Amino acid sequence: MPIKLIILIILSVLIFLLYVLKNVKKQQLNIENALIWILLSVGIIICVLSLNIFESIAHHLGIETLSNMTFFVGFIFLIFVIFNITKKISIQNKKITNLTQEIALLKKEVKVNEVKQKNNKTN
Amino acid sequence: MKVLVIIPCYNEEKTILQTVEKIKGTNYDYIVINDGSKDNSLKILEANKINHLNLPNNIGIGGAVQTGYKYAYKNNYDIAVQFDGDGQHNEKYIKNIIKSIEQEEANMVIGSRFVWEESDFKSTKLRRIGITILSKLLKILTKYTIKDMTSGFRAVDRSIIEIFQKDYPDEFPEPVTNLSLAKRGFKIKEIPVKMQYRKHGKSSINSIKSAYYMFNVILLFLIISFSKGDD
Image (cartoon, rainbow over all chains, first blue to last red; front, side, top):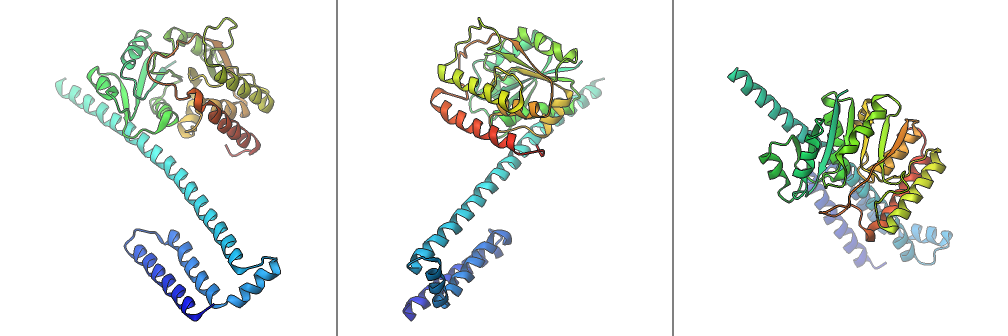
C-alpha cells in the first residue's frame, strides 16, 4: 500500500478517535459504548501498519484478496453492533413502559390523597 | 371477594362512556386505563369523573392492561377482569366468568367465542384459522385445550394478578400468557360468551397483518416452550 494512503487512513482514524473521545468528555457517549469504537480505531491502525501479516492470514484462510477479508470482517462487526443496539432498544422500551405505568399510578395516588385531605378538612 | 374490571382505552372516545356505564350497572369496581389516546378519550374520562389512570405515553395494549393489574395488586383486589373499551364485550357475562374463580375451580377463566357451536361471532376466516393453529399448538406443547386463544375477555385470581403485575408481555399478551400459565400448571377454564362486532375503531389485528401476527406469535410460542425454567 502506498505510504500516502497509509498516512491518510491513520489520520482519518485519529480524527475519528478524537471525535469519539470528545463525545465521551461531553457525556454524549458513555464509556461503555465508546469502547467498541476506540477498539475499532486501534484495530484499524494496527491492521494498516501490519498489512503483510494480514495478507498471509487471508491467504491461509483461502481468501484470495485482503479487501475481501476486510469486507467480511467489517460486515460481521457491523452485524454485532446493530444486534446490540436492537437489544438495548428493547431493554429501554421495557424501562419506558415501567416508568409510564409508575407515573400513572403515582398520579392516581396523589389525586386520591388530595380528595381524602379535602374531605378531612370539610369534616 | 373484591373484583376489579380493567378497561384499557386507546382512542375510544365514541364508545368508552357507554362501556363504563355498562360496567357501573354491574356494581363491580372498575378502572379505565387511558393509553395515551390521541382523541378526546381523556377529556371524556375527566369530565365524567370516571375512575381512570392516565398513561402519559402510548405503551400498547400489553403495558396498558398490566397497569390495571398493578393497580389491582396495590389495592388488594382478589379478582381482576379484562374488559375491552370498544363495546365488543358484554358485561352480562362477567358474573359467569368470575364464578369459577370465586369457587376456586380455576385460576383463570376465558370468555370464549368458540366453545359454543352456534356462536354467532363472525370473525374473518384468516383470523379464525390463525386462532385454531394457535390452539392446536398449545395443545401439542402443554396438553391444555383453549379454543379462543386471542380472547381479551378474561378473569384471573389473586395469584395470577401477582404474576401479571410483575411480568406481562408487551407483544401478543393473550396467547403468550395462555401458554406461560399453562406451562406453569395453572387451572384455566373457558366459558362461552357472545361478542359484538366492534362498531368503532379498529381491531389491533387487521386482516393484512394477520399473517405477520401469526408468524410472530408462533415463533414466540416455540421460543417460550423450548426455553426451560426462567419465565
